[in-house]
Structures are given as structure tokens and as C-alpha cells.
Length: 138
Image 1 (cartoon, one colour):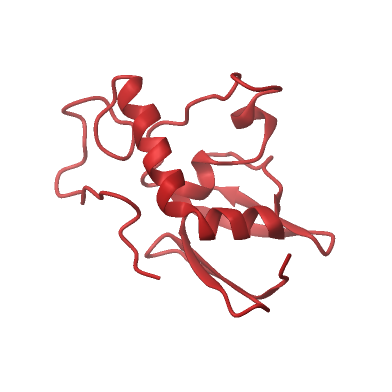
Image 2 (cartoon, helix red, strand yellow):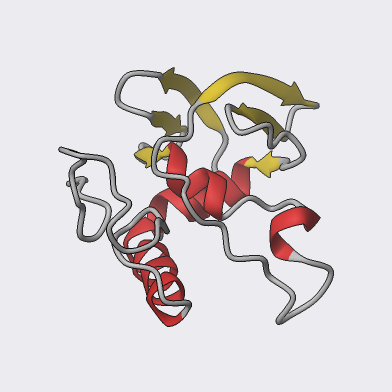
């Protein structure tokens, strides 16, 4: 798998930019990173035990800690700090974010939530943009 050459956290746009030595570069929304956290708290301890993450549209990243030479641990503004994101996993999230986003939206809708943030109907923030897909061109 490729290794990262650049990693930038954009607080205002809530994007993590990551470039790899194979020439690939991705802008991954914080919300996608948060809802697909590789932690046991989100993934559960086996298939079918995943915990649906809701209301994460406004989540921020307050810091990023290196984990050896193979991963990072983002510190999210909602207090979540147990996900260790390997370079391979970040590459997967970046390269597959369209299908992953659609899968997440499907899980939200199946659970009775509307929109892309998991807020209950009628509780979306005024003026908050509603995205379909990830909204980014690569």
C-alpha cells in the first residue's frame, strides 16, 4: 500500500487532506472519518455489532496524534479518541468514500433518520447544507 506524503487538517471546511506516494490524494470529510471510525466503540466486536453514529455533521478534529509510522489517531470534538486510522484504512476511506457515504446514508434512512447527519426529522440546523454523496470531485 502507498505511504502518505502529506496530511493536512482543515478545521473550517472539516476536511482531512491526505496525499500518498503513488500520486493519489483525497479530501475526506471529518464526518465520514468519524462515522467509519475503526474503533471497537463504533465497529463493535464482530460482524453485525456496528454502532450507527448519528448527528456527526458538525464534528471537528481537535488534534491528530501519530501512532508509530503506520497510523494516526484523530481527536474528535465530540470526545471520540479511540480510533486508530492506519494509512491503508485512510487510503480505503479516501478511495471508496462515494460508496461508503451511500452505505452510511442507507443505514441512517433504515434507522429512520433523514439527511446526512442523523438528526431526527425537523431538527436540522437552519441553513445547513444538505449533501448528496460526498459532494467532492476527485
